[in-house]
Image (cartoon, rainbow over all chains, first blue to last red; front, top):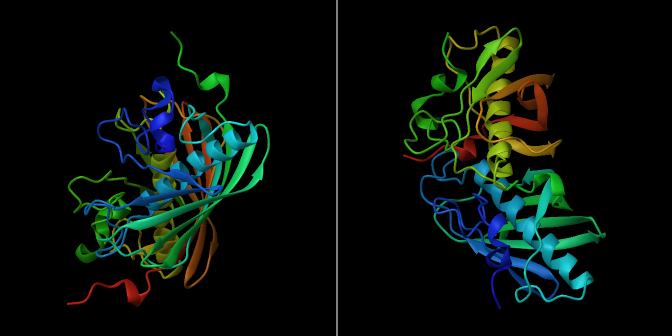
Length: 155
Length: 155
């Protein structure tokens, strides 16, 4: 079983958040477990909002990339494919809602959980939680759409 | 006239997005002009979503930090202070809504515009647009709140 993001096609594996081919990126990863996307991420020490707390922009990035992977997994299941084994289709973000429930402490692993709540042929809606030490710190709701052909690089 | 973010107090100037004291951060900056926050940001070339397009996590970060600066500016005006001259109060993000209207092209400067739409004593709501070449690519709506005392580092 591979991480979902590690099975994005080479041409679409440069995302700063989750692309395995972006050498300076975050390399956010998730596995497909029991109908959900599940991952873990430990923020680097410079990803600060205020001293001691994780930068909200990074948290939004985690919600975003984790939701795209979860949307892809849900879409694969609907299509009879196996997430983590078959190639992962690339989704892009139409809209991102992030609620910061409480300050997220810096310095430990964060647990990412993505739950598909609406799975259409083109659009998937995913709810994401980010928790630290068992306590939810961030809640997200993301609308993912299958990558439009207009975003394919030419040549 | 200074950038709003350059006048955050030293203790709260380490934000990865906009803190002048975070050596590896994005250093997002905005000025206060005619009742709005106005800024420009050129994404580094590795901030990729798909080849040729800006990473959505960075765009969410731009919306976030730009909204915090705009909220601070609006709050200062309401308090009779001068944004860009007096110290900038630190706001934190309660919620962040980002709509990706179209793919944002990588390689040129993006224009940031923040408009305060509701200015309370503790809470400010800001609408943000990010545009490239005169075309809006991203629209955000952010709820900012004055930094709670629980986020002050001890000692």
